[in-house]
Amino acid sequence: MAATSRQVEPARVAEPGEGISLEELALASRNHAMPAEALRDELTPAGLHYVLCHYDIPAIDPATWRLRLDGCVERALELDLQALQSMPSRTVRVTMECAGNGRAALAPRPVSQPWLSGAVGTAEWTGVPLADLLRDAAPTSGAVEVAFTGADHGFERGVEQDYERALPLGDALADDVLVAYAMNGAPLPVQHGFPARLVVPGWYGMAHVKWLVQVRVLDRPYDGYQNTVAYRLRQEPEDPGDPVSRIEPRALLLPPGDPDFLTRERILRPGRVTLSGRAWSGWGPVVAVSVSTDDGDTWREAEVESAVEAEVETAAGQQDHRWAWRRFTLAWDATPGTHVLRARATDSTGREQPIVPQWNLGGFANNADQPVVVLVLDS
Ligand SMILES: Nc1nc2c(c(=O)[nH]1)N[C@H]1C(S)=C(S)[C@@H](COP(=O)(O)O)O[C@H]1N2
Ligand SMILES: [Mo]
Image 1: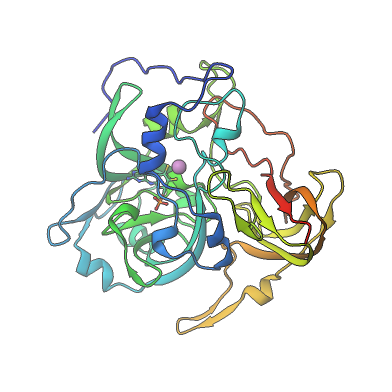
Image 2: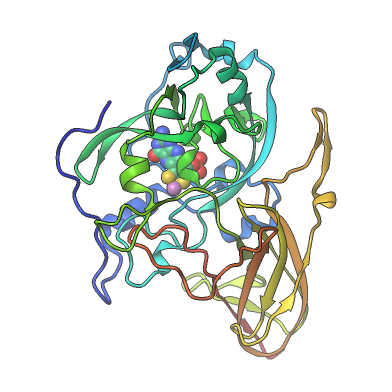
């Protein structure tokens, strides 16, 4: 459904010192983060993967669900779940991250889902390559973009809409883009898009449209809300801004020791610890991770698992896991006192995590490194 003609309400930025509101808390408790201890797992169990739903989770009966592929194509398609599942499939291991991850750490804070650093997870998605479906439908020569519609519906800053996002045709045809019906080898959990969702490896979460019901090939640039209004990097409301697309590099430390219940401060005993964590980027593989144990005064290079080590033989054949995070490790002699740990990733394109966040009105792509406060006991 097209957006109604009502004026788009402006996005809001919190006043200096304004706390997280009950509205933001309600969003934060609907849309949960991945607990940091899940960084120990290469594959995030589905129940620990972060969740972000703009509206309500729609009720879908898999028996009547259909995926339509139409628009500027020679041959429109309509598939039921069985037809989709009987096509040749592919499994891709993907680290997915919400573009709003890190938003709550920005000052001033854009008022929206207040993520700290946990809006991430890595899953194995199984589905049909979108390129195969598009090839069957045969886009006409004027095709430039592809729009993806979810079954969920709501209002956002006054604009009524189905959740819908578009990709340039070239990105939609990339061989790892999937219409996925399984997550970690099981049917998609409802909150992750049952019965089928788009998976666009390397892109921030907003591109991975859940509860997919329609794929529409367009002969002109898409002008829907989520591409032209919502996910833009802008400083001022009137800036057209740049589109949010691929995931910026980020490293997260697996918090060492034991947590304090309230503060989440980490408590451990002195001695040698192996610090570890996982790092990812949607632009190219992470090639280096620097770790600081003195709040950024000095940095040391961690050991980063190589692409070869990350390669795994599966029943389906060799997989390179180039879209999945990589583990890093560093030995640390923990001495009594309070320490602030930090980690920063650099990818193969030379993109590097900043120390100072890049502020923008939507609070997107804040990949500044996250501190982990550690109290090392006397003995
Ligand atoms: N249909 C639909 N698809 C959606 C969304 C949504 O609200 N509706 N949220 C998007 C956003 S912003 C993110 S970050 C990811 C989150 O995917 P997950 O909940 O499976 O982690 O889904 C994306 N796909
Ligand atoms: Mo997101």
